[in-house]
Image (tube, rainbow, N blue to C red; front, side):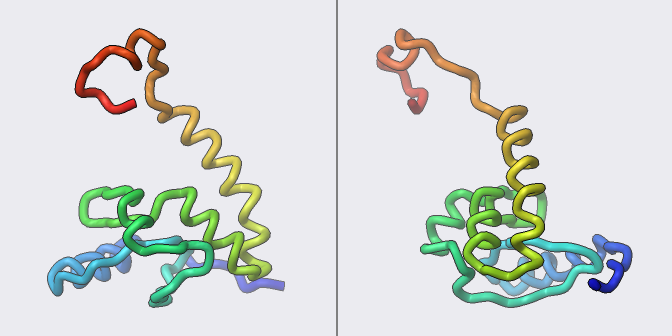
Length: 119
């Protein structure tokens, strides 16, 4: 039986992000649950390159957060039971998030036109 989670207090995450910012620490938050346990990981499972993961990050104000796909890959590769339990929920959330935030579809004419927009 798992212990009940205590209430998440976002001030803890803000304090850590502020300290990292103030000391110019290059970092990514990979996942967090209440009450905000912190593990410093230098080579997370399932993420082959920090540089690649950093290029896919989501920057939300002071927070530099790994992409949802990288978080899922890390949890899947960890093999920890608690991560395996969360995977179906994270995958469902990812599908819904990507559905709501999908880039607009472009026609063949848009793609073949020589404009500055990336394909």
